Length: 105
Length: 174
Image 1 (cartoon, rainbow over the protein chains, first blue to last red):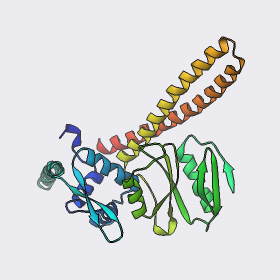
Image 2: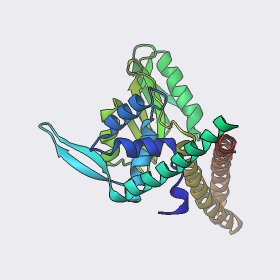
Image 3: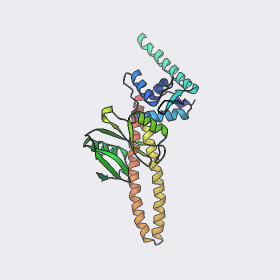
Image 4: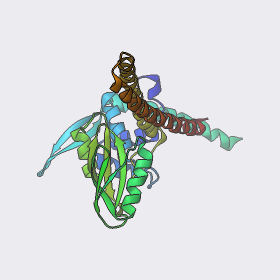
């Protein structure tokens, strides 16, 4: 993992999160919209680019799912992806923890 | 209906396609500056233009994602991908955060810089041809110079958009 992998962009953070289970592109967009109550709505280009980048970096991989009609491409987070996510979680926890100092001012 | 236009910048081109759609003309095909339209309900479609990874080809992954999202690939031209989605299905934006917008415009800028470099080489070849007595070479030289200027202008605009986006991004982070 390189320096510039963190902090994750909001899009990357939420895409990784919605790939904790196998999910396809459309499912990722829907899940991110639900999680953020419509605040983050991923555009097709943003999502496609992120999926390509994350595959290249080995953070996610493809799991093909056979359905009656056709092969459907699904993605899932890898161990490397989970590691990146945890690093980001630790960074965010630090921010939130330090934010509590405000209450004691 | 067929219209001929030469666009070097995708943003005004997208605007024009959406204006045509709002007037009841949906783009159906594109070839070398010729845009073919067919009648549609006013504002039935929203158009967007993407910049692909390969010329005249999109990956199955791209195609599948777009299909799943109700997005239709109307035309492929070089690296350009003209897309549309029914307005009734909600808003249609391709890039929804500053980082991915910057990435998108950087790819376009890189392509223009490559094209400009090639054009300059061709220009030099034609000038040498002209100097050594091939009259017609001067004509080509002028034509290439005009094309280079148009690409240069487009590249300059891309650079401006990227600078604005970078400033936006840094503004948030500072």
